[in-house]
Image 1 (cartoon, one colour):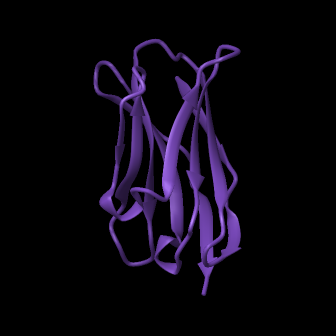
Image 2 (cartoon, one colour; image 1 turned 180 degrees about the vertical axis):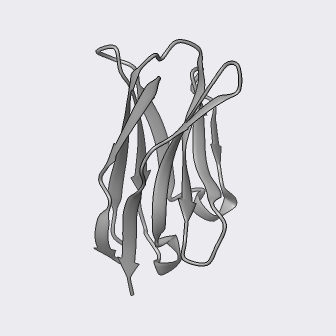
Length: 118
């Protein structure tokens, strides 16, 4: 089993910054990638950014140039970060951490709220 613990959400004004963290623990063998998705009220969950074990990144067009995903695998944990700069009201959503392993195993975090006020 894998446990994902997210942190770092909150309320920020337009143009501000937040940094999300997601710490993975448990059976971390076979991780392919980790990433962030978000879901705004009344909308489908969408990809924000992902990063593979080999540090290959992928971003949604709407966040390119503003968000940066990174990872750290020290201390027997895999942690993924999402640095969010120049935040806009349309970035308001619940942000979920996702972890994919070999064998099509997928794990989701509990979500953290990000609210950007205009």
